[in-house]
Length: 161
Image 1 (cartoon, rainbow, N blue to C red):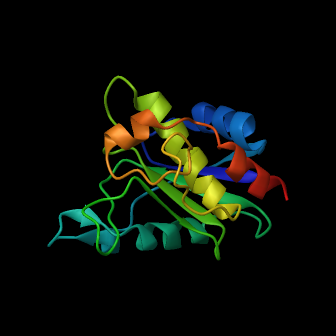
Image 2 (cartoon, rainbow, N blue to C red; image 1 turned 120 degrees about the vertical axis):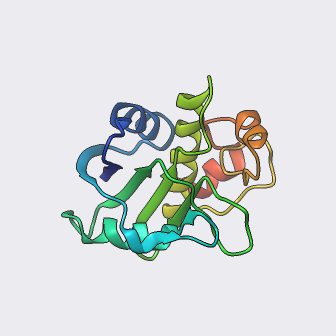
């Protein structure tokens, strides 16, 4: 079971639930809405540190046996990268997806791909070299648009073993 948390003002639960069920056979339930912690904002980068947001999600009600995913509408980053679309912390069982840079006519499809990608990291998958696989690392929106919402055959077999 995966609990879906969203930043106040977002409403993507149905999309997340459908995507995780279809591509990872994972059931979901809605979690609480939350506020982005102020400490997560980095004024030098004018972006948010996703680890602080993951810490906030960890404080929300939920069972330790459930995976958690949070959706936010702020620009997030990781050390060494200008930005990221999402981040997974497998040790905590929490993933985060930012819809901030996913805007445009393909917003729904992009969110679905990033949610499946980050949740698959929680299930133990690493990035894939196949640009058509959902586990391919997206460095640009074009990368996200070109890949599938589904796992390639190799990643699917890793998940099933």
